[in-house]
Image (cartoon, rainbow, N blue to C red):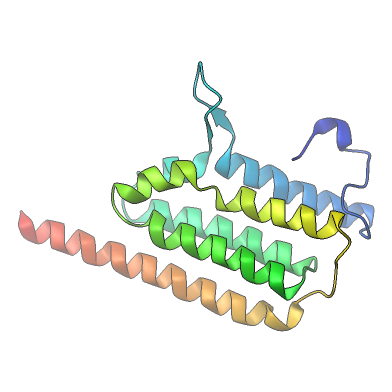
Length: 167
């Protein structure tokens, strides 16, 4: 995890200082989305992601957009295809289950896709199994993420129309 004491250390082997700083930025945004706040008197941590899920329609889409941006940035700095697919799976699971009313709100407090992806990224670099940039699949990932976002927006719109029809 990001630590202010590590600012001068290269925490991602094989990357220059500028890339290392960008990767630290990814860790900070991930922490803000998943673990920024602590419930007083407990060790339970949560971030902006579950809070956004309480905003009808736009909250899940905004959270998804930030997570998708983080994923694209992580892929841009080169991970193996296996790691990229695992990261996409985390994001897809978070987007799909997180968009279910009530259950999704609770799920967002527990499942921290961004932190899971940062953990995968760190393990990938620390183990030294950097086997390519994955740039060839970047366009496919972007299309999948756009489709997922579209499904979330469509599903939310359908739910709103259904609820309005009940009134």
